[in-house]
Image 1 (spheres, chains in turn purple, blue):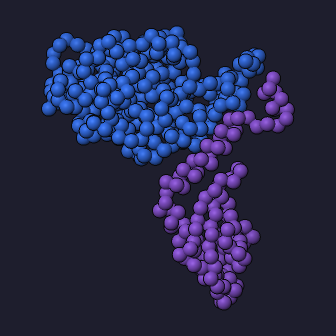
Image 2 (tube, each protein chain N blue to C red; image 1 turned 180 degrees about the horizontal axis):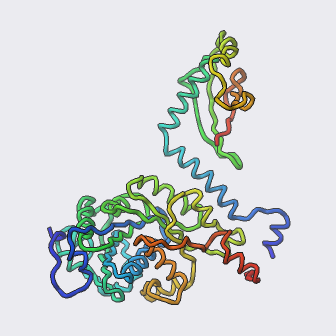
Image 3 (cartoon, chains in turn purple, green; image 1 turned 135 degrees about the vertical axis):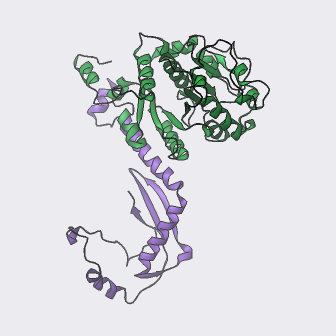
Length: 126
Length: 286
């Protein structure tokens, strides 16, 4: 009977909750068990961002946090200055690297917040 | 070293592997990370089911300090020596192997009760399992809970792993961790234990597919959470001996799969199971 009520009022079955919790806990387990991977990702991330802005490599913080239904990556990257030629580089990019074969350019992933305050901005990880 | 002694001719069965020393048996470790998910019960039943098929089997209780496999098999009164007596060369392997009371080709090597897990020498354990493989078709090592020394010792001599998981978040998480620790060498296969199909149907329990969508392991079998498992353990007579129990049949199906037979995939504990849909249609709302 309680079950029926729950179903009528749209309460999700507990097995779905278990599944979701399991998915999140395993993602975070796998991240915590791969510190080298996180270091490598941090390096790559900074390399990309450094093309546009000068960042303080010594003060970069990357962490992972569970937010409701998702695991989020939080990157705190202090910006020291904006590269003057960053705009030129961005403009010349499409000619340097044509879009991936068979993919319309509109579907390419856009990098968000490269000019804005990057610090403390959460980026959802899958 | 005692463990390498030739078996004495005492007229006991389970010597078929010894008769052909060139053929090595298979060594399995039964593990899970989490405690209380049914490793020991599964070990006893798989050993029994494999022995019923005519294979020679030795069950090794590696849970040093917390001996239990003898209880599940009903052999507690027959245990005189234990695995540490053999490893430390106080008795011969033959003296320590306890013949099972139900299956003539099954032997038990009990754990020490009054010792600790870190007293076991990993290399000696590896050598012991190796010498058992020369004498038995199957060596099944029942691993203690945890991922510390006891786990490492239990895993040492094995070349294949059977991981036991229950449909719970904590158990799945621990199996995921254990499988990560085992790596590729042990080709781990999964047994899902304590499955309650009725709860799965109602959305109150993770289904077999839910569990294995995450673990992605070859599914060896699914054991339903049935009272007859408890009754069998109370009596010290592994359920796999019985012919009238669907759970016993599930254990025997696992043994058949291990032996390389092509057994149909288990249907218990999945939302899409035909029989459950049929059951629901026929008014099986409980």
